[in-house]
Picture 1 (cartoon, rainbow, N blue to C red):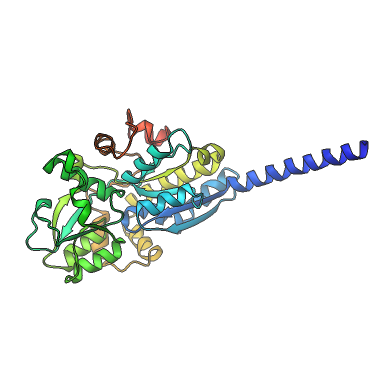
Picture 2 (tube, helix red, strand yellow; picture 1 turned 90 degrees about the vertical axis):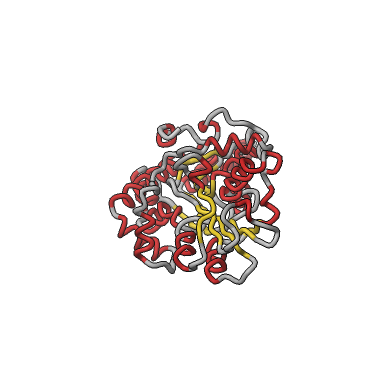
Length: 336
């Protein structure tokens, strides 16, 4: 009996040690989903310069960083909920959708902003000068219909023009297309895609590559000024159980933002290398140096979209403030 007891105790001790080992291993693992465009430049810099690994090592953790490229907020949200990633990179719209769906369960919240960027709805249809001119013959490409931040901003503009009851009026002519493919179609012309609500640098490439291309709508005009359109978010469980990895990630982002601001040319070269991007370097630099573009981790001007989504029934829970859907860290508190 004593031998059995000792054996069981040994097994229990071994299980505890194994659990501790697995927890320590998990603390350094972080899988990050990003999408296409310069809005993810801070992540590109962190990846190229191994900044997450650097800050994790300073905290005594050997980080295992994995990078995943997806297209559209819906795909990113699915990956986060299924446990295939720890950090999701997408628009404010997908963040709000997931915050609403997981409240009281996984409690998904924002981690940081990827900076302020103006998003343009560009068309190559000569008959279109405003969103009111789009017809059933047009197709507007965007990352995810009814989910992406581009789709939500378009809905906000539609609500102002036609009223809240018709906020989704242009959803029926919207199609989910990755930014690179949508830009290629708009530049080439002659396809069903006559509009693209994109992101830098694709919108600038369209304007430079097709003489018929012009801006129909600007996100800053709809949102009332500079805004954090794309953000990073995670589950409460990951943040709670991986404090050192989480902090290393935040510190890496801050360092990346400072690097881009101080060294725009080197940052441009990193974007070209990491993303294997095909874009004129001078055009790329003009975007990075655009005074309307700001690289910072503190979120800015996101609540108007949250309020709109609740008003039209896109989310059930109304946030009282930005702090409801962003983790209350020092970096985000300053921007709230």
